[in-house]
Image (cartoon, rainbow, N blue to C red; front, side, top):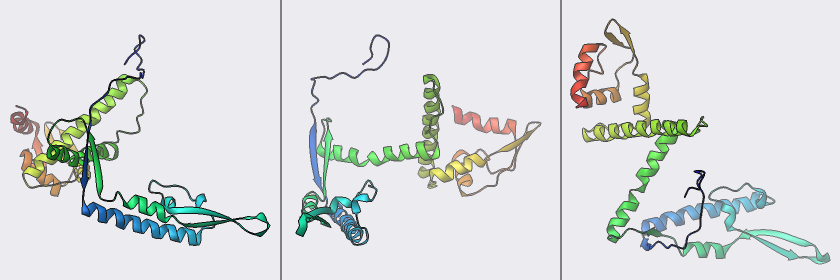
Length: 237
């Protein structure tokens, strides 16, 4: 919520949201997770064999050091000897949950429908990847709120156009990747002279696909402005 100055503030609430947990199991996922873990365990063993102190190794998102256990034993003279071994109990604990997935939701519909929705989440992640990688939405070189909003409005509009082009090209059997589509559109430059447009780009696979979709004569070397306007006008209706 906002305070009296218009700033957003966080408040604690006692309201509860009903949610449901859906548990699924997949043998393929189980086999995949165990294969990944087996590789991590082998790397952990190599780490123990080649590194005097594995704890000095920088952590990673899938840190293999979670399988390494520190064992300290007293030797003669009360000196402490430190050994690194594979934590077998940790492996057993993780294997219990291999193949299981849990979905938390507040949707009130069939389990099958909720699982289908969850399986389409990768499309959302794919759009975010296009925003960051292809459309350069980050970093933001603005300070004023209205300019930040304008920046993201342009990025979202470009994403919408790009995704619509992908869908329409797929419908006519011409699949293109975001990278190829963006590269082709960037190279589509023309020189204008007295109402005549001269293309400075060469036609390629993506260009021919766009021409098949739009019929605008994009693969022509020369185009009159009046001709292009006549072709574009029906598409805007």
